[in-house]
Image 1 (cartoon, one colour):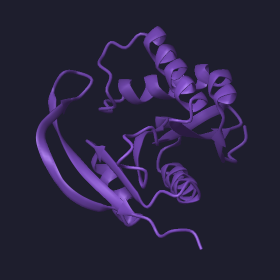
Image 2 (spheres, rainbow, N blue to C red; image 1 turned 90 degrees about the horizontal axis):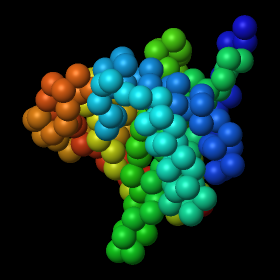
Image 3 (spheres, helix red, strand yellow; image 1 turned 180 degrees about the vertical axis):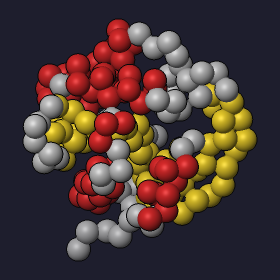
Length: 177
């Protein structure tokens, strides 16, 4: 078993080809209690449909997807959402930073976020925003220089239906030289 983790950007064809592994990561995160827009019980078909929609967004140029893989397959992912209104060409949203529970605490989330930030700069983005309902993710983002704006109580639901607070963050990126 390889412990080497590769992080890279994936095109629409690769997202579609890796949809089973991406669905596994999404299901693992939701089953682990992550508030990432899905509720329990979550059907595999729901996860597969989500990744089909994401692949379509990549194909249309509305999203950029990053994958982390080890010798067993996909172990993490994050998305840069760039399909925003015309008055926000400088901005992008960060969504669905997902890391499989079997490999957490190994720096994969950090590597995914750094790759995403580099791609955002290359795309001319100077402001990124995200939200999270996870204390470990908050520590990660703050360690990467993200600024917390605040928290909204009972903003979303955990997969088990329990309300949870959501924290909002932004990061201003320096333009590429």
